[in-house]
Length: 169
Length: 371
Image 1: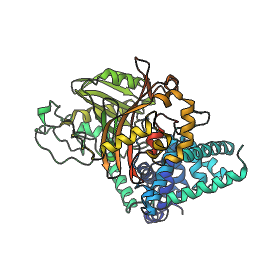
Image 2 (image 1 turned 180 degrees about the vertical axis):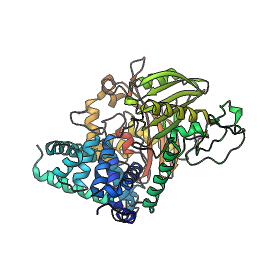
Image 3 (image 1 turned 90 degrees about the vertical axis):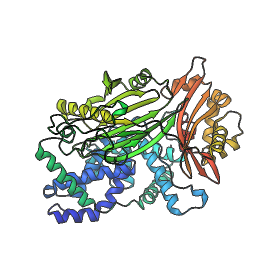
Image 4 (image 1 turned 60 degrees about the vertical axis):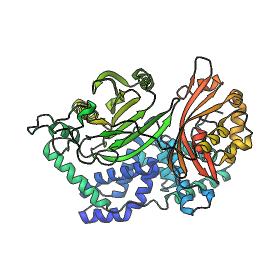
């Protein structure tokens, strides 16, 4: 969808907001920050609406740039999970708990590794597309992907948020 | 080298995990309209020739509420205003997040709204920190203001805070805030600033403003001015009375079972959320650090219920394992007697029919213990 009238901005948001929000939440590693990130980027899109040929690509690029450049605070606050799965509660609680676990694991990754993993395994972009978004070589994308995935797998397998290659072992 | 087939299985598994985690993530209605409203507000500020931060100084679009005078707080008057100063007394109800830990924020820069709030407990003696974060609409980086109110022992000193801040290698300058000695810390590239002071015995306040990179010298000065206005507008009502948890004794026992040396592994793992999943890693870690395995004792300093299935827990671990202190110097302190201590803030969760230490809490104290 190309940029154009105000009505088409409404249509763009109505049609694409949900998947873009999901990407933003994974890139930010946190629902609240993801929502803020997306709204900031949509504001920038709105201001340039008539001049943007491919709003979705613009939003995705802006989300990645913003998510990989934010200063991270030294202290991370633990977020409560949903009701415990083994109390026999609904699958919604299981999904919330899994999402919280995934977001906590994603937050541990350095920003560019996190961005590559999200764009590759959630947005299903190719290495070439990711390289364009991140303004780096496909080789760098491959490296970030391999390292990010290795770390993500170790964290999700062990629950150790401090796992790193060559770390405390 | 992990076989390629196993890699493919994990690739599929992580994709499926993302898909499941994304289900149910839905945007709130009205996004396009909210975007338009923010754009219109920005245009009004541009027309007025001021930014949201300097609006505080010239009284444009800012509601100023006078703090009560009995706390010795500075009365806040917009610079250059021709109207009379606000009179002390009850003001309009404060917005979300503006009352935290018994402290009221009677002033915020225009356009800032609550982005999040929370609390944590740590240390021995216990310190409970309450914080609220507010965000503004500025571009290219939204300004983010976080106010932290920490209640602890009356013996807390600014020197202790200074020592903690210097670990981050910020540029630090002594200043005076509300008549108290304070530190102004400036983050790299002037991307943010923080004010830290002891407001009264047992009460430390941290006020942090981020997102100001690229605003230049004038922008930084305006940011500092805004932060000092927020500080000036604080009103201290008093230390909050903490709710006690009827499950406090049970939670203390769970922490003791999970952390203390000498507890049989099965009982320790039963006291940790999803304990069996971390059993093997925990065993390897304790074999590697026998001093920790032999000597660790935990003290629960504080239990604060959050909801029926979660409680905030402040705790301290003591053990004899110097190698760990060398590995994690920021988290583990060596005392004068040669023993190590680690202060933690985490959660207890109700799961499997009992209170347990949350896995995230256990696996972070010390880092790597589950691996």
